[in-house]
Length: 365
Image 1: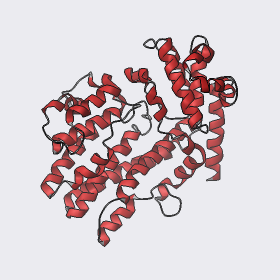
Image 2: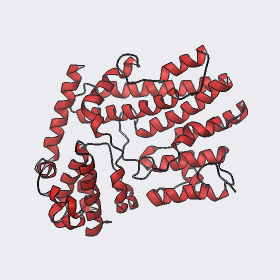
Image 3: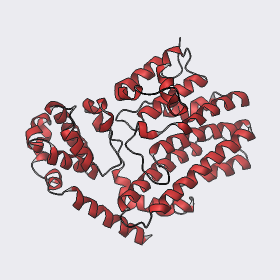
């Protein structure tokens, strides 16, 4: 059988490679239908149709917040919807996409913020999927799907606006506010990129597209997100790497509790790596090596330095004991420069600096 996308069994294998732990657990309720879809991958004969879409969404749900996400973005945001040739197919696929509303990202992500009932990067992924459905509905002229998807997007955007407003000037919640800002920027970017690529014509369709593009921009974007966008650019934009370098540290993939959160607040994560009972010295050394390589490749990212600092405080013997696992050409960075400076700054001092930066950006408006 020839598959247009990733073969179903290969897709499940990719999930097992990066998050095998995600396959263990309940499958019978709507909140965990994603796990049932992954387990049933061998029953799917074609890389198209509703069952395959459900499998792709399940794989994306399970891995998008891990170190090696499955690469199905273009399929679930565009190609799947373009293959819907009529309203019946579109509505059937849209019904599958709606199942994601029941899936809790807390099962598979360390990036869920407990604000307004929950906010996470998964929200942006599902908005992007719904935008794909909406773009196709506009092309087919399916008013029912247009109304349903637009209502979903509008509700989610209002939720994002309320989340920021709830923490914007809340004393003691500045670090949470920064994480909210970063999450909003990620999610609006996902939605806007999909909407901007819609192959639609006509005044009505173009007007709908204008509602969802450039959402975080100052001048012609949605005013609800202008301030969050400015704060993101001033404080958090440099802390939004894809963490590709951490893929080299394979031991991280074996443990659900080593998923990484929102940077640059990685001190506690580095400490967890250093004392995790499932990691031996060699495995901890592999993580340190990946962090050092990542830092040297993106020296402006503070998150890598904070992770190294947390690791140093909690690992037996600190970074010195694990230095032999770092590439020889990179080992010197542990003895001088930004890494050494970061080792002398504890989490409280670093976070106080970030709070001050947030307050300054907020006051600048």
